Image 1 (cartoon, rainbow, N blue to C red):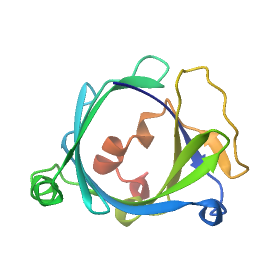
Image 2: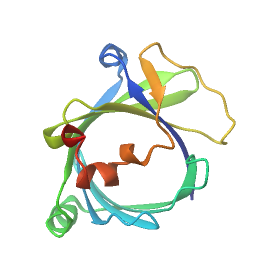
Image 3: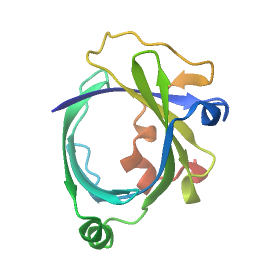
Amino acid sequence: MIEIERKFLVTSDAFKAEAFAQNRIKQGYLSSVPERTVRVRIKGEKGFLTIKGISNDSGLSRFEWEKEIPVNEAEKLILLCEAGVIDKTRFEVKSGNHTIEIDEFYGENEGLIMAEIELKSETESFEKPVWLGQEVTNDKRYYNSYLSNNPFKKW
């Protein structure tokens, strides 16, 4: 239940030609407090409730618990969320033995394209595609919970 993840900015839309899957995602936060972020997500035709703890000092690891819930329940819960619901498309791209998830944001976060890769350990290596840019793993501005309250367009 520990998530180990690195985040990067994306330098071009070349990843779209490499994507094997894509889904529209709508997500909101019942709590965006870093110590206990509670997220409601609709991804395609599925709903999810996710609880995340605060990141460790490196910003790479944190507690994560997620359960699938009926999409109609997720839709109702999103109505209870804090202002600033996130709207994005997630593209999935294979890179060596890993899958990189690239989020293209819309609305108040339009213009932001960010990639995430989950790892088995903080020191695990992975193949970096040419469109993978600056690492922003430990920059809290790139957490979706932060973006919901402080949209990219207002930076």
